[in-house]
Length: 407
Image (cartoon, rainbow, N blue to C red; front, top):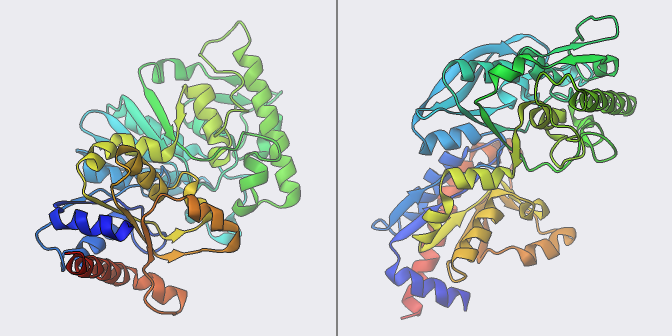
């Protein structure tokens, strides 16, 4: 039945939408698009191909949006998680939208494994990126949370924007999440003028609150270098910081509009609590990463004109249905037209027992792994482009053969 639908569609097919995510550690989303087109066009050279690289708000978001928006890359020197100088980049559109990935300034990839220590790492560089974008005329910001090495509840970012966080003796706090246990006062007045005309949207698919068993420290702290004792230390410190924030928000002195009770909002724990600071102090709106990107690139409009949709991601598994690009594309495609064929080309497909039900519920018509042979991981990653191109070619050849038998 499905193949019959494919073959009928392909007799008259003109528009092929290629809308994948990146393949982690091997191909960015644009390269995946090009590989699929390269393979498919060998069989269907006259089809009209529309390349729409996508992301879910994490790494690669700014590159994806730079492909479809008019603007320029900005490079600046900021502080990395250990307060060392590093060059970070962000994309600034001609109409004043700054697209910032926090990993550029506080990413885990900036640290050697032995340097990972969320007790002392800081989001200071993220604040420097925000300040630079404002100085260059940004009126809107899209900030992608993901890949951070930090667990400081965004305190470093706030400090870079001029916020003074002090202990009981009036001394400014040192960098890192552990020092937040000493928070006594917070002067956020510098934000009043700085952010008064700035709209900030945060792309985030993490649902963790700031604190507790499902919070930033417990869920993400260990992968950032935290021991079990460190996790407890950080969780207490972030809870104390949130408590002081509430006290200030509820005080009559309010020199800046602070949103109280953000600590339990889903996403507050993203990027080690950076989501909390952006909501509480910067009035940011947290939105689904994929949905935000889809809206910016007008995915629904592209789907409405497509005869076939090809999406994909590095590994299709049980997590695919949890807000990832491939499933998001398929769900939107089927909501627009249930008969619109959607094919997923992935690096690998993990159909383990635990994910069986998830696979049954995924709205793909066909799912194809692209690995051509068993090999060492480094060779598989290095050969990702030709593997994807070859898989796309075989897919197109199969569809053309099906047309022959469906006449």
